[in-house]
Amino acid sequence: MSSAQPAFGGMFRQLIKLDVVNVNTEPLDAGLEQTANTFGIVRSLTLAGESTESIVDCLVIGAFRSST
Image: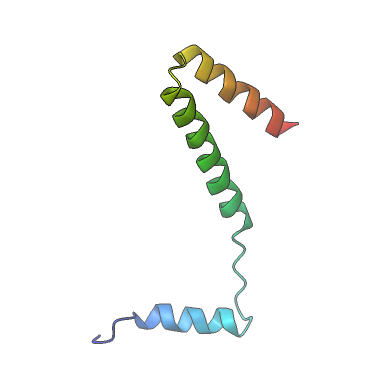
């Protein structure tokens, strides 16, 4: 295989383009967004000098809010 792109990747991309295969990335996008949000909150609180207990409280409250 001398091409820079693997043959399977090219064929798979064509199948997606032709609507033969549908790839739903919404659950993945939501998970990545939640992870980035959580990391940002923890990082901000850590930089602000908050205690571990405060960070845990914020995460628990955030998890509760997103589940309701």
